[in-house]
Every structure is written in C-alpha cells, then in structure tokens.
Image (cartoon, rainbow, N blue to C red; front, side, top):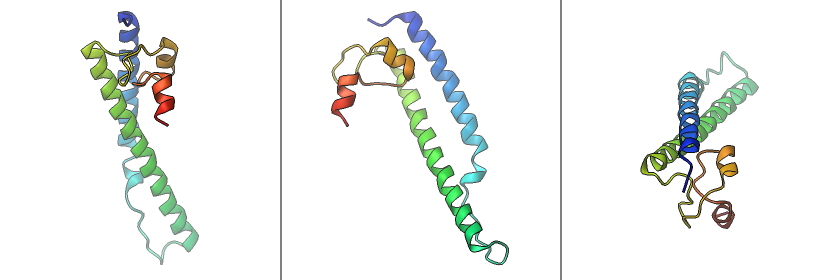
Length: 115
C-alpha cells in the first residue's frame, strides 16, 4: 500500500515538472523549425551548424514529449490508486526509486529485465 502523503507529494512534483516541460516546449518551438538554407547569405559550415541545431532541438523536444507522456501516466496511476506499484509484476516500487523519478512505472527488477 502506498503512502497517500507521498503520492500527493509526487503528484505535485509531477504537475510542476509538466508545467516546466510545457513552458520549455513552447519556448523552443521556433528553434525546431527547419533551417533556411539561403546559400547566398550563409557559408557551408554555418548551414551545417544551423541544420545540426535544428536536429538537436527536435530531439530535445521528442524527449520532452516522452517525459510528458510518462507524467500523464503517473498522474493517472495516482488517480487510480495504483501509483507506486510495478505495472508488470505489481510489486511495490521503493520510495527511493520514485524519489529519483516519480514517473517510474517499473520496479528495478522488471526495469533491468526489459533492457
């Protein structure tokens, strides 16, 4: 059985993290747009740098989106009353593991087995 006060503390951490990631996502929207390749304005290396910066920004956005999905899943588990339990084996996830990342849905044994 999970501790309701810990669940509420993690809910608040998850909500705060979600707001932070959504703000970052909104701020970085411009940097994910395709790089304009006006060859008369920019040298070859500068174009390559611009293309690399766009790719890096797109990858960061992809990771933020994955984290946001994990946050939604964790919030749903809190609401359903099964937060803190492994979604594969139904064993309780140690509080220390959830303190590291409140979006974890697997116990350490199932997480290691899925690698």
